[in-house]
Length: 413
Image (cartoon, rainbow, N blue to C red; front, side):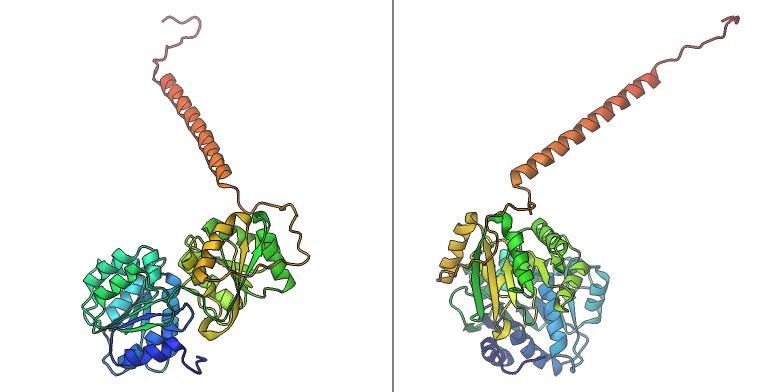
């Protein structure tokens, strides 16, 4: 699989995992945490009996669950061990089959796993190993109550491994509740990107962000990129803009079905498209080997989101570039990120770019205009509905009046 030497988190976590100790590990995104918890579990599963699910990994997103399963399949290729991913967006049938057959390892998102636990077949009585991966992201996404409910559905595992990129107080509290005398590994004391990431800021008027991104791609300054937007609608518009300009792009966000999201990521990994546009839902679920660039088309609202986004590049001690496009109104958000990083990010100006140009088209209609348009559409719809109701009432009134019988001339009544 391309491993030559273990990363720092792997060097420290694997021996503790093999000793059977509970583990609390905090390390940067992209540092190799997945192999750090999978390898000890695989080592112990190989020598055990089969036909019962003994390991469960909880992950915050579908993409991350699928990525962990893919890594497990690669690492356990010659062992005969089996794994399945349990997540939303797909049919329950194949997942039910995985429960009934008793695959060795399940990787699950909390919401879908709770759905299965409402059914009789979803019992994990033989569970021995539990992993919470990206625990801080699960907290951010509101999964903490679900995790507490899940823990009531499963037996107390003999080993629990707790991995997180950051360690906020709520996560520390949860770790104290579920871990027994854990080995503690802290490779970073505060949120920070990996060392191999070169970070740049491009100040640009908001309406010219799309044009600047296209210019960077067309000039070859960016070969391939994972581009992050704040909203699903922005992701769709950036995707359409890039393809309109002849730049092959795909997109991933919450309104896309799971098969669509899986295909988009597969096409990006295979080089069939240069750009993958995504929302933060995918920030911790995308693992692309040798990804050269991450672009923050929209600056994230929280510094931790920035760190998780840019952590998609420079993974496993590689190198990569993180580019953030900053409009004047984004400076306050950038200042918060720089305070978290403890450094001011270098500003870059692209030579020859028309910074004073008038945008050819707006990438997004301002919120006030969108609301006004929606209200106007609703008013028109109400007017049509009222006219239709009035016509219906008149027709009913006309049909209910008694008809006078008419006779032809020369006939008696």
